[in-house]
Length: 147
Image: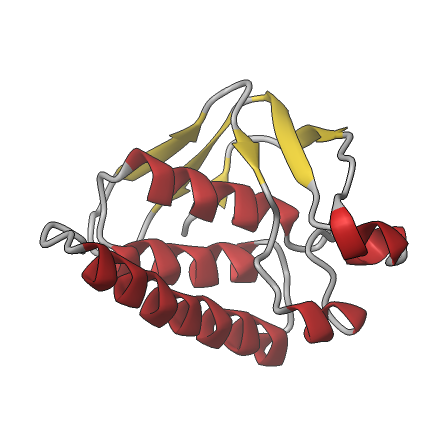
């Protein structure tokens, strides 16, 4: 079974919102996080039998990319799933796997972290919808290598 090698240790990176966003409550501001102690995620039963993803010290990520209005119900960072978001963002940034594979690993990692199935499926649908938006931006830029 897949597993994280150790717990996530992160630090919030202070931000200064600009423009109209500075009038919003702090929970509505996009946040950045930095991984203080890197971790690994060992994939046991996905496409690769013994794939290990490493999230290094110093990796910066933004938590879950939750649409603005839905942040009241699903915050961008929560202890129940923030390690899976760090893993997902790192995998996407490394570019060694397809977007679909990264999204599947994210869904699996949510299960490893104990997220209830309904929220896990909702968050997986969210990253798949985000993938459509990502692919559209790549297409508009003319990037034929986007996967």
